[in-house]
Amino acid sequence: MTVRDCAREAEVAAAARRGWLSAQDQDVRQHVSQCAVCARVAHVCEALVADQKAVRMFLVDNPLPSAGQVWRRAALRAQADGVQAASRPLVWAQGVAAAVVVGLAIAALGAVWPALTEAFGRVGSGLMPPSHVADGALRLLGSVVPGRWAIVVGGVAACVAVSPAVVYWALRDERRP
Amino acid sequence: MTTFRTPAQDVEPLAAARTADCATTMSEEAFRAFYELTSHGLWAYLLRTSGDRRLVDDLLQESYYRLLRANVVFESDDHRRNYLYRIATNLVHDGRRRPWSAAGSRVDVEQAQASSDDGTVEVRAARRLDVARAMGHLTPRERSMLWLAYVRGCTHEEIAGVVGVKVASLKSLLFRARRRLAGLLEGRVS
Image (cartoon, rainbow over all chains, first blue to last red; front, side, top):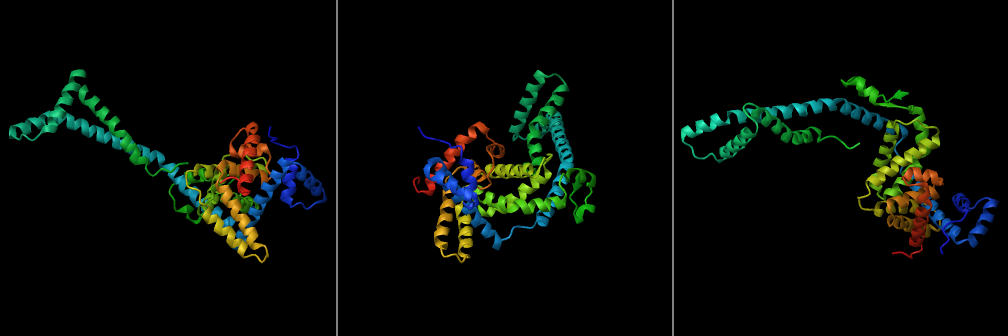
C-alpha cells in the first residue's frame, strides 16, 4: 500500500521554501532523508521555489505596470462598464420596439395581402407563387382564429418569430461578465 | 468607500449611474500597498498556471480589476489575497481550452538566467526549463494546487477555497499532482 502523507509535510515544505537555512531545518532534512513522502515534497517544493525565483529575476529587468497604471486602467474600465450597464435598458427597449415594429409591419402586410393579390391578378401577372403560400397561411389561420383576430394573432406570432434575432442584434456587443 | 476618478468623468452623461457602479471598498493608497505586496507573486503564479507569457499581463490587470469591483467585505489582507488568487485561478481555468504554450515562459526564464553571473547558469536554466515543461503536462488545477501549496505555503483550506474543491478531496488531489510533477521532473513520465 502506498503511503500518501506524512505529518511533517508542511514543516518540510516550509523548510524547503526557506532554503534549509535554520538549524531546525537540518533536523527536518534528516527526516526527509528517511521519509519517501517528504523527500518528494522537498523535491517538488525546491523545484517550484527555484522556478519562482527565476521568474522574479526576470521581473527585475521587465518590470510590471505600476500600481497607478493598473488603478487608472481599472478606473477607465469601470467607467465604461458603468455606462454600458446604465444604457442596457435602453438597448433592450430599442430591441423590443424594433420587434414590435417588424411584427406590426408583417401583420399589416398580411391584412392587405388579399387586396394585393387581387390587384396583381387583375393585371394578369402569373408570377406570384409566394402569394399562394401567404394566402394559404392566412386561410389556415382564419380557419383557426376568426375575423380580425387572425391579423392580431399573426402580428404577435411574427413578433415572437422575429424577437430572437432582434435581441441578438441588440446584445451582440455585450461582454461576458 | 471611495470611487475611481478620471479626467473624463465630467464629460460623460451618465455620471450618477457611473459613480454608483464604480464604487469600490478599497482606497487608491490601500490598493497601491496591496499591489506592491502581491503583484510579483501573482504574476509568477499566472505565468506558471496559464503557461502563456503573452496572456499574463492581461490576466494580472483583469484580476485586480475584478478584485476592485468585487462586492466582498474582506476580513484581512490574507483574505483579500486569497480572493485575488481565486479570481486569477478562475480566469486561468476559464481559458484552459487555449493550448499550453510553454515556449514564451521558457524563453523569459532562460533570459533571466543568462543575465546572471552565476557559474552554474546552464544547469539552473536547464532545471527551470524542466519545471516549465513539466508544469505544461499538468492540468491547470494541478498547477494551481502545487503552486499554492509549495510556493505560497497555503493551507489545505485556503487551497480548496481558491481552486474550488472540497477540503476532503484536496489531500489526494495534491498527492497525485505532486507525484506527477515529481515523475515529470525525474523524466519518468513522458
